Length: 315
Length: 127
Image (cartoon, rainbow over all chains, first blue to last red; front, top):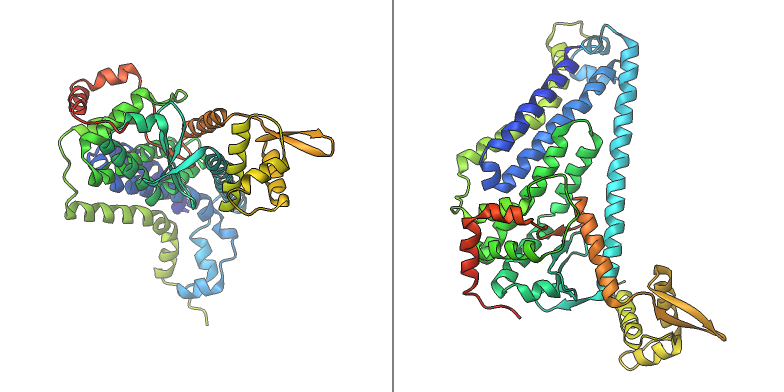
């Protein structure tokens, strides 16, 4: 019975403390790929804990196979005892309903996100084939005055550059901008975004997931900036950022008051970053591994307790 | 699939160029200067384009006359509008290089901005 309560506490504490921590530590921004992973690990841990709450409450109702009980060297009855609650069957039934609703919701949202993305990409590619021309430098050029550069992820991936952008950018700047976009495509940032968006939509009342989605959106830009630096210098990238955001296409107003572009330019023009040292990356890897496995461990704790307690062995 | 897209683009090219309603035969003859094509292929392509809303058709006797619904510029503008709208959603469909920054945000950059722009004057432009 304690398991669901501990899971709720874990979700609340991890969500609050972890969320605040990741917003403060510097390595998240200096090593963005680690930052992305940390936010993903935190989201998975909290989401996992939340999902496991109704599941652990519903276990008394679930047909726990005798083989599972045998594996733990206990009986199913003894096992169930460790998961039962004073509220008894009704709570377990309600919990089962909640768990099923959550499952349906996640599956439905996931398929809706994928379906919409596929449809939008197909429409975009159709239009691109019509109005775009393949440029020898490996992107699609479209005739348009406003400078704009973007990429279309997916199986038929493309980088699109408007003629306005081509005119404004120098050769160096264009090279790094293309490298930035290609990093998005290669690293499949679209998948990372889709996953964080899925969690944000599944658990709407919980601010952590929306926050994670916002942070990951900014961090993928920084990761792409870092990768682009191999193809040119930071200054060229910062220049391109300034040029394109000054002259570029107006986006509809966002809820966020600051733009990622500002953070990126500051990051590029500040002192050169040193790559993360091995001890630090090892400790982050270990911490995230513990974080992700914690919910399942907490959910299985009563079962382990049942196994270790002295019990009648079935004959 | 890719070949069909190229063919559609080739057909639209002609429609945008001529800017008048044309029958299938005229499009076919012009395309045949560059490649081998069957009448039915071009007819299918124009049918697809009609289905997608890129061309309109008017009956002239027994045949249809096709013309573009929008200019190439309008198509491009429409496509980029879609891109901007999708990017506002911050979904996974596309990843644009950078959004628009306000003058206030630019003012915040201060010295960082001026050092960047002074370096820029030494660089040539792509043209």
